[in-house]
Amino acid sequence: MKLNNEVITDVFFDLDHTLWDFEKNSELTYNKIFEENNIDVNLAEFFDFYIPYNFKLWKYYQEDKITKEDLRYKRLKTTFNALKVDVAEDMIFKLSDDYIKNLSTFNHLFIDTIEILDYLSPKYKLHIITNGFAEVQTGKLKNSKIDHYFQVVMNSETAGVKKPNPLIFEIALKEANAKPQNSVMIGDSYEADILGAQNVGMHTLFYKPSDENINVNTHKISELKQIKNYL
Image (tube, helix red, strand yellow):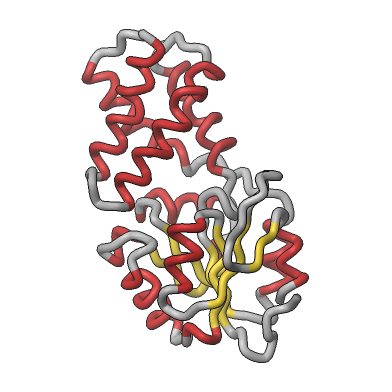
């Protein structure tokens, strides 16, 4: 079932976990900074704890329950504690800074990202709405060489609120000179991307690469190339 092609003028994407392969790039970043700072941990064991802790802390951050600084510190501190690895406080802060400085230097994208952006860009105006930090997200787009596809890049620091808050979508729509009924949001977070966009009247496509069967009130894709079935 296609979306109404005559209606859609603007396509908004989430960035992390949707176009930019956050897990792969994050793993490469930690591998680099742990080596540089002589942190002796098993990377696989580290991520067994880090990934769920980071996910939970990001949710708290989206809900304004913790600050950006809390997020960056606690995801490391909690993981090292779980691993029973003793890392000094000043080193945790250094690792936190090193992670942010290095993360956007890795540029792995999900498969079909360039293909789908090439397919969409002649037909629609493309934009980004992301909860990521401004300086990091800009670096990710530039270093992965996809920044030129997007006319508006709206992040939560610039907007002052995070998805699913309707204000970030409204600000992005206004900057793009787009109407919600003529726009579609594509992202991997049902709460932040899909429900957030639906609450301002946008069309939605839920990107869920896993085989997990989730009952959602929107169109759903498991591969980016499947966007062609709708647009």
